[in-house]
Image 1 (tube, helix red, strand yellow):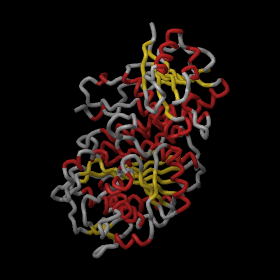
Image 2 (tube, rainbow, N blue to C red; image 1 turned 90 degrees about the vertical axis):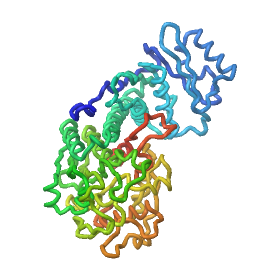
Image 3 (cartoon, one colour; image 1 turned 90 degrees about the horizontal axis):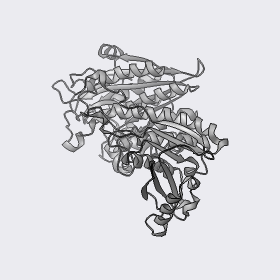
Image 4 (cartoon, rainbow, N blue to C red; image 1 turned 120 degrees about the horizontal axis):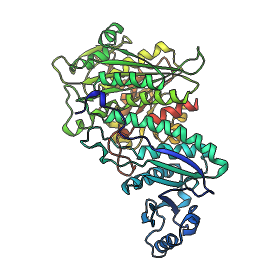
Length: 507
């Protein structure tokens, strides 16, 4: 194990981006040529840059049907005395859209990494989507190129065994260079914060304790320019956060309640409050998880990591909004002092929580955080949490569940998901579901009575503590880690960072 002080230090520099005029030939070792299925070899924007023998090689691949431009189709050719040519298929042009552009931006970097290409030049406009401005396209490429260039190497004996693309040159029309450059800067900031969120998530639970998470948040606050206050065990007791204390009791690690503040708007303007679940390791408590269910539980603080990283991004972007981030950080362990099924916990709100399952702990600690949010008189509260396996059953591994009783807010947040790339899909928050979480001996119970609609009953539980302001809940349990076909390294995905930044930018 590395010492704690060595963690979260980048082992390589972040990818460098250069924006150049596409009409002026750029000195580069490797080029990427993108094609749709019905394109001719000569239609590529870089065709005129190729040497005669390279043109012949590309034309031969098309003529012999070895490359057809199908989505995901890849061919790599050596350049004489230089680097390589990558031919990347984009599929049917009539079906080209924002989601496919996101994957293509990642795919090209993934191929470059596998081919050990240090510098790659991209015809930016070849990835253009009609509804995207040049600035937004620059952001999309930078953001997703960085995401694809990530690897978690902190615990490798030889950290340099990973390969990274050092430089990405974006070739654009001269009149679009400034807009593209502005977008690239934005994408870099967001992409680098996603890296930090993924680092936080990927650190194993044996080291990523509530204390380490709090320490790193303090460091990030100093580096990026937001205020951080950490409430320790004594403060949490004084504040009467009985729900957090109940979950934390089984662990030798004390809980922490992390409060982050950024004020970029008017002094008296109500803030947006972001709440992130910070369970640094979840065994399930006395309702112990099965072996397979526990392997990824160092990622159970992914919501908290997303909120911390989002504060880092908006601070660097100097957004004209006021934002508060709240992360209750605990371990959920089956210790002798741990809470038990049947226990009743008195939350900060005064409501009592009847514990029927100790593995439904995230909603319990969020109850105190959502009540704590009231003191900021928020304009909007969004909580982000790896809350339920039921949401994974409902929506799979690539999309987050969105739940809010506000229909207009639901529409806006769903649109933000589409723009940001952190996709969300709504599940109903009808009043009929409230009966599911009404307690027998306490005010509310932490799991539903029927055993069905677990994602909705989890959200309905949270709503009992969020009725005094506008609120929405994101269940990110599905996309908390990367899956095949996303062109991302295995491990934490950094989900939620893009969504929260885009949300605050839109306001």
